[in-house]
Image: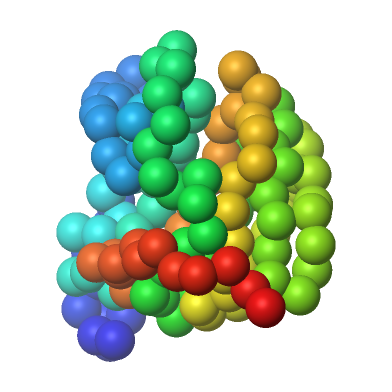
Length: 133
């Protein structure tokens, strides 16, 4: 991780938001500029459900190769299953700290599901894995 004194100030305005595709076909992503501001130490983005109706593989069991992952629900709900934690439904205002490499999968989400996600490092990988024993 680089030193915070190497980071730069970032202001991401909602009026200038650019939404793009990303890891999940059923979601749109808004990059908040944190990856550039922290020299890749962190990434922060808003993720929202779009109207695409498709299976996208990440509903399978998977892990993220990262050191830190925080999810804050801005709107709607989603049900996930976490290794050792069972099924958990998260709703507007809820926060999840996903421990590194926890196996998990999404089961369902509302049409208005939207989250803020912060991950370190910014260039983390997602890998499909076998279900927990």
